[in-house]
Image 1 (cartoon, rainbow, N blue to C red):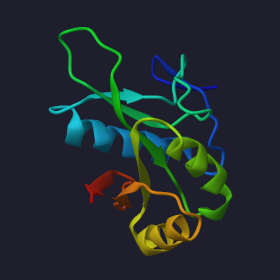
Image 2: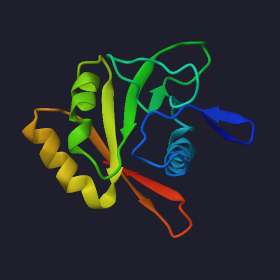
Image 3: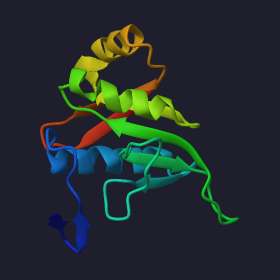
Image 4: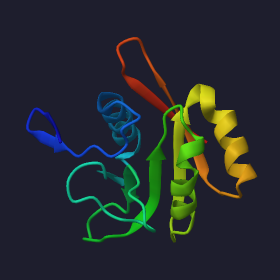
Length: 138
């Protein structure tokens, strides 16, 4: 368990630094919170979608109160091949999913997804010299 300020984060994607993932999720929230309810699914009380725990849930805005998940996002680091089983699980869900990958891995991620018959939307991120993230959506 990682404690940042008063927030507690459960670690499950050991290959990516939690600080980096926090920056990427923060950028996604900043970009999309005007259109979706953006849920950080890496904290306690994670939601299971199709046998997997995606990093981010994009849900219908409230009100009215709802649990409508419209999109899920899985944030990847450099190791794409070992993530393919999780991609296949997410593809089985009833919601669309995004693979959020480093910009330099975007083409490789698209080719790998195509090769294993995984249909996903893509977003890519860059990190500046201070570790702050910017996310672009396709």
